[in-house]
Amino acid sequence: MSVSRHPVALSIEQQVGKSTRLLATVMALPLIDGIFPALVLAGALTYPFGILETGLLVFGGSATVAVILAEMDDSPREIVPPILFLGLVLVPVAALEAALAPTIESMLDMATFQRFAGLVIVAVAAKTASATVGEYLPRPAVIIGLGLVASFQPAGLDVALTTDPVLIAKAAATAGVGVAFALAVALAGPQLRGAVDIDRFRFGSSVALGMLALSVLELMPTEAPVALGVLVVTAVFSFDPDAAAAPAAADESDDDADDAEPDVEADSPGESDPAAPASGVPTVADGGDDSDGDAYRYPRSEDSRLPWL
Image 1: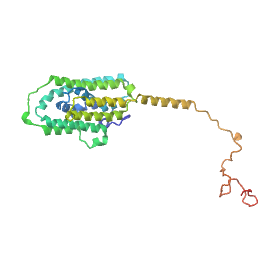
Image 2: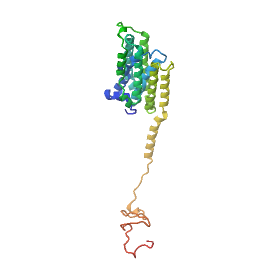
Image 3: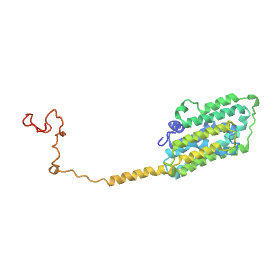
Image 4: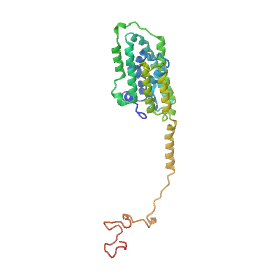
């Protein structure tokens, strides 16, 4: 990428291309790979601030920021319509997957599947932090598939479709948070480009994803929004307004240096310094050894040598 070598965005860019298609794939990937349904089944939307954390880290996150700031160089007026259209697709699909969640939950051992849901978030965090580590990890869809196989219990299968309107509303709101985050980044793009250290934000987002995984695995006995706090601190430390002004100041200084460069006039042969040695004749310091004897064109006879020699 032109600004940040984001591992997740780079792998997707090689398959779908750049700009709008890349952003659509990055934001829809949690729905395609099954990350979002896994979080819904694991109860990530049930505890306080779960909607904000999941929306910002799963649908938003560092990959969305990297694509908007590094690849989409258009004006906000040109970027906003594709994001709005993408939101019209993401929100209904997220609601549909949440509508199927209770039926899927009836055939799974949720205690087992919850561990795989936390594991897939850890894998995404590792892929976000390092492309080298991500090469050795399986895709999220593979982990979720293994979790479905390991937690499948056919005795509890309920063929009837059961829906939870509250859960559907939470899922739609979660996707809406991700779309709103992308819109905010796009609108503030002219001010954020060059002022945000995308690599620093990427590493901080991977830490926040790790905190979200601990919450899903219930290894962090607290309902405080730790992952959201880590993301806010990451955003603060990644923003450097002076970095955006530095390139402009450097360009202005280069222009001033070009304008102030003095004109140098070549001296004519007749105005050359008489003390300067003749062209093509090397200069030898007094007392130096000239093996060729041609530096000063002195004869080789002893009578014609200089007194100090």
